[in-house]
Each structure stands twice: as structure tokens, then as C-alpha cells.
Image (tube, rainbow, N blue to C red; front, side, top):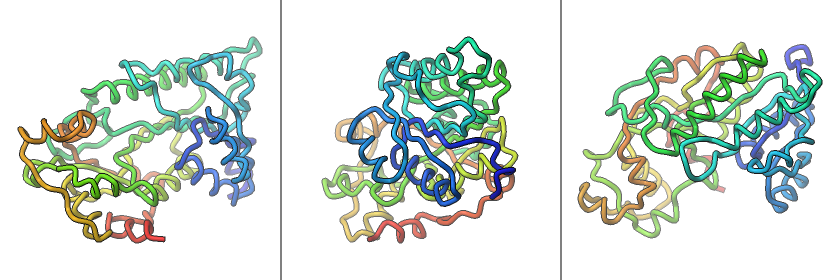
Length: 301
């Protein structure tokens, strides 16, 4: 990649956790300076160890955002919305900060790439969906993400700064497997009752984030998954078998309502299959881990 291909001065990652660190490493290997905005001191200490320049922020406090190095940056927004409600007030604060200065464009990045969720589509009863499928978020966590998307679209239209939205299914990878849940033998639905799910390996998501900045993805929405058909119970069973752990006990819906957390139940009540054709074709992606079994091999030290 040449500087001509990357018309931005540096990288700024808002919410620089696991995925942010993976994205940062790729850009660092290509000679770019990376800033990581995080809230806690221990997070900033870790970023320093990775040669990522830490920026202290609190997205719930607008005044803490004024010194962010967003001007002319390639900006990744990976921070989660608030834990409650149906609106992403953190995104609202962030965008207000970009518009805060009197001088036009003083805080403006060159591009924003936002990780959203496939949950914005709600329950599609196992049907195959693409980016033209109407959204219908049903739970608050998905409504918050869709609210963030809407704010970004509106801001992009007013500022003429391109925004790319990645609607991501479940993320797995090293350190991101439900091993404790399997060890605790928390029940899962019988497979014939289990919803269709979508997932992507963390390293594949990182390379997709790079491609979204280096191809003609400006202003686009992409469904992000490895494209394989699977259900939630099959996912847990495959991980259990691979890691030599017992499979979870299986229950029907009445028993699940009693034994499975409300958070997990909200995922189990939504079923959809994501078509990743646009992602693969437009971003020229060759997945490192096209199946769960391929990806699990990377999770073993």
C-alpha cells in the first residue's frame, strides 16, 4: 500500500480493545501511526506496550473528547453504546465533538468505519438476508446500534465525510470462546429448536476493517460473516468437541426460559442467515478462516 492509496495522516481507533489491537497491528506493519482511545488506565497501559498511542476518553463526558486527534484521521469507531436504553448517546457526544470547533473541518476525519451488529435485522426466521433486507431491531441492544448507524448517516450527509458500516455477526477467536460456559454445563436448546447464527473470526474481521479503508467501500453497508450455515447449538457442540469438553445439556423452550440467562435468550429468539456476497466481492476478501473448524485451529496455543 502506498500513501496515495491511504489519503489520511494516521489511524484513530475509538474503543481500542481486541479487534482494535488487531487492526492497529496491521496498520503499524504498513508504517502508520495508530492512536487508541480508551477509558481505563490499565487499557492505556496495554496500548503503550503495543506501541499504540493511548488517548484517555469518556464517551459519556463530551468535554473529555476535545483533544482527540481526529483531524485527517482514518477513524474506526469500535466503542459499545450505553448498556441501557434505545439510543446511543455516546455516538451523539462523539459526533458533537467532531463538529465542536468554529473552524470548518477542524476535527474532521477523512473516513469513519463503524462496527455495528447483525442484530439490527431482528428475527428473520432463519431466512437468508442481504444488505437490502429492511432492518427491524427488536431488542434494545440492537436498537442502540441502529440509532448509532442513523446518526452516522445523517452526520455523513451533512459533513460529506464517508462512513462505512460493518454489520457483524458473532465474533470468535483466541480468548473469545465460550469455554467457561461449557465447563459450567449451562444448557442449550435442542438443535431442532436452535436459531440460525452467523459468525466471523476476529482476524478476518480485522482484515475486513483494513479493506473497508483501502477499497471503494465509502458510504457502504456490509454484512460481515464467514457465510457458513450453522445454528447456535451446533456452534457450542463444535467448540466442545474441539476443546475436549462435554457438550452442553440440551433443553426445550420451557426449560430454557428457566435455566438460560435473559441475555442469551434474546439471541436465541432471533434467527437469520447472512449473505456475505457483497462483502467478498466488493472488498476483495479471501477469508483466512472460512469455517468454524478452520478458525478453531488458531485458538490453540
